[in-house]
Structure formats: structure tokens, C-alpha cells
Length: 401
Image (cartoon, rainbow, N blue to C red):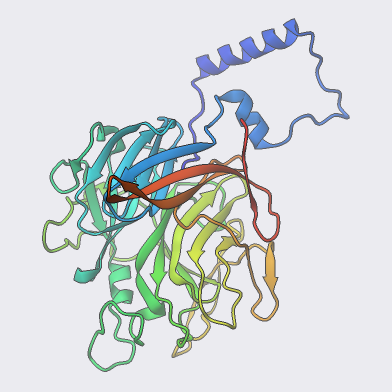
């Protein structure tokens, strides 16, 4: 993502304002009368304050896994592309500046912390039943092929809550069935983690940033206890003391004992849960891009939007083997409405990368394969769109500045 752009220094802002006023006066422009509200969108304001962003940013083609997520650092002028086992850094024109390779786990969705410029990403070691957050020092990515394990640019934090839900023996037979959807094991159908974003606590539009990570959820149309998206929120203010180098063999278990909040969103089962999670400061919403589910009783949309301004409410979790309550988050009552389930959503891209610019514009990523002289490579790019809220697809591609 990234949004949360820092403001211009005071001196620079003053100089810019003076220059704009001088140009306006020279052109003989008049101020808009009270009856004329003038430009009202954040998009228009942003366009006047900084250079226009490119309509398309190319992340290159690589011998890697497919594109998992993207993050835009507008302050630094960088874009990060997560390709499953590598992280690629470009400038805003798509020029490759460096990469981190050698991730032995599954690197998923990524986001940039505006406070320190570090990149956070979900990192699974599923064969070891371990789930980490990777934290990458983006400022140190200055060349191709930095090794995730030995370069010192990557640290990781373990999430015990995810591991416990993933390995839960739900059928009580004393055996954990492992990485498979065809089982009653895995609490809430948890298959690990994928979607990740930084934003305020749910129900607020300000306050300290929290890291929110979304469960992957196995696609299983025969279960009734896997119809919620599960979101964990963490206060990362003291995480530096927990960070360790990436595991070379057995993953470490250094991390918070529990999340600062665990939340549930009723959407119906989706295929591998939230692929890309994004906080949009423009509307105060949390966007969840997913691979569609397979349960015929649900609408099986590809985008769900959580009303981030609504406080969580404790209520019953549907379909659980024993009665259970949790903190529930509501969907925005916009878009396509499925009356039988009450679920709202849209049909939209964003599963390979979803980045809010916090002014009504978003970058939506596209993934493809490239044949490079007989060598098959994974490609990715991110394309500028504007939120319209139109049904069924709420984004429109931006074709000009």
C-alpha cells in the first residue's frame, strides 16, 4: 500500500503555496464564489500537490512464484512486488532497484510502514506449522539478489495464535491431518495467513497503526464452521524486541503470545481466505480481495468491504461445532446484496495486489506468465484505478493524469 503519506516540510509547503498563488494571480484567476464549492475530491487536491502517478507500474518478470501482493511507498518513490519467494523493489517508473531472494517460506501480501519505511509481509512455513510476519528494511534493498537469510535485511516475528488454529484437532481423534482442506481439522478452516495491512484499530479512523493479518481459509463446501474471514490485529510498537533472523531450518517461535484483537467477518467460505487486505483512509474501510468460494448458498463475491468506522460487536459465530461468540465486524451495506445471507460485496480484481492511495485511487495488480527465450517467468504489474462504487465492479481504470 501506501497511503499514510507524510506531509511536505513547512518551508517547502509555504514555498509551494506562494508559487501557486503567484501563478493564480498572474493568470487573473478569481476565487470561487461561496455558491461554487470548487474541487471537492481528494483526488483533485492530490493531483495539484504532487506529480501525477503513472497509470501502470511494471514489476518485471522473474523465475519465481506468482505475484502475491504489492505495496507503494509514495514518500520514498518505491513500489514493492511480492513474488511468493522473492521481494522486488522498483521506482515509480518500474525501474528495478533491487530484490530479496531466498525466502524459504511462502511470502504473501505486503505493506509499508510509513513510520520507518519497512515492508511487512505474511510468511508461511506451513510444513513446520509456523506462521511469521516478515519485516524487510526497504532502504537497504539496493541491488539484485540480496539473500533473505544472510543479508540482514529481513527479520521475522512468529504468530502463535495462527499456529494454534491451524493445527487444531477439531474432530478429536488425536491426529492432526496436516495441510489439506478435506478434514474437520483447522479451527475456522484456517490454512495459515495471507492478506496483511497496516491501519488503525477497527472502529477508528485515527490512533496508532496496528498490523492486521487475515487468515487463509481452506475451500471446503462441506463444512459449516468456515464461513467467516478471521482478522488478527497486533500493536507492533514493541515488536523490535521480538524480531529474529529468518529461520534457516526450524522456524523460531519468538513473537506475541496472543493478538491484541481477533475479529470475524461473515462472508461465506472463500478459497484460501483473504488474498489481499487493504485499509483505505479515504473512506475508513478495510478491503478484502479473495478468490471466490464454492458454496452455492453464498454469493461468492471476489471483493468484500468492512466498514472500518463501525466498532466491533460481540456476537455468535455461525456454524461452530459448539456455541461460540467473537468480535464481529460488519460489511459495508453497499454493492451487490445477497438477501438470503445478508452478505454484500463486489466483483473485482485485486487478488494479486490491492493498494489504496487514500484519495479515492487504488493500484490493482495483474499477474501473468512470460516466455523469456523458452524460460517461463512470472510477471506482475499494478494499474491505477479510481473507486466509483459502481455495481458490480467498483473500480474504473484511470487513463490519464
